Image 1: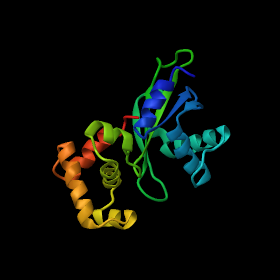
Image 2 (image 1 turned 45 degrees about the vertical axis):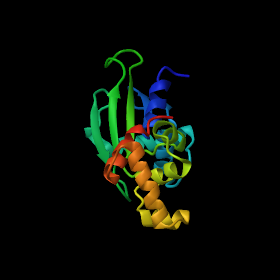
Image 3 (image 1 turned 30 degrees about the horizontal axis):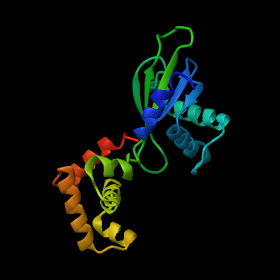
Length: 189
């Protein structure tokens, strides 16, 4: 396990891809979310690319980012994609510029994906029932009560009752407040 693994794992929990690169921009280590994002870039579909595929996908992203993305300094760049929201790249140097073994972490934020908490976390933190936790996750995923009703086969009245309980237990009053709160707790395993 490399020394960057705890950072990579933490960023994974936050639904952020992270790639540790050397001073040339070659990947040395990456987390699961980065592998998934790079797989979409390389394969055009779901899947985890080979190490060489990850290298090609990262090189492609770096080329798209152009001169705006600097490996040796902290920078933020958005890269347009053919569909949906752009991909955000954020570089953070982990060692002094020019030092032997200098490394940078490139954080990949897929704006098409929002972090979602787990059922277990919601049940433990807020004492939600399994049904309430499932509904809360659907709401934080951007679904309406009508969409959840169709998906889960439950009446709107049942879902409104459950949502009311979720609001009470999380001490929120509106769906926007609930989504903001649940997005913050999504980092917990």
